[in-house]
Image 1: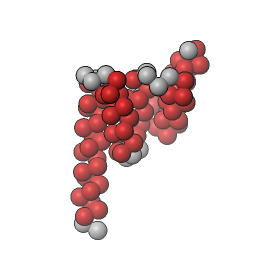
Image 2: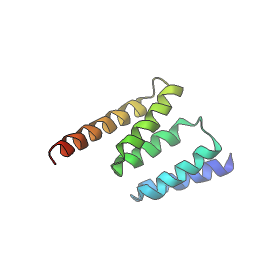
Image 3: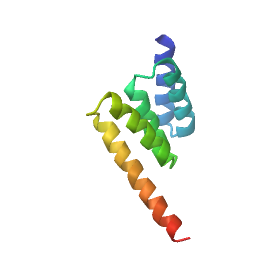
Image 4: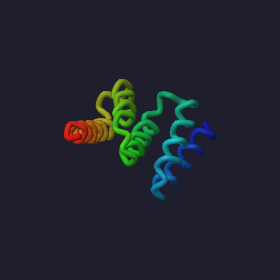
Length: 95
């Protein structure tokens, strides 16, 4: 559990400095230790949104909502992921 907290805090620190790829990697390491901790999934979803990885962000939010069906952050970030996917789809249609 101590390693989990350390990795999560390191991920949070990377988010604060805008290093979203590094933060996402730390949260992924956390998930190997505990797959039921929703905050690391919503945090990683935030990183994916910042990196324009909308499908990955949506997947993380879907996972959280299976565990906590009223998680507001998961709903909000999934909506942002859907919005990003729609914009990408429209841009691809114009090519």
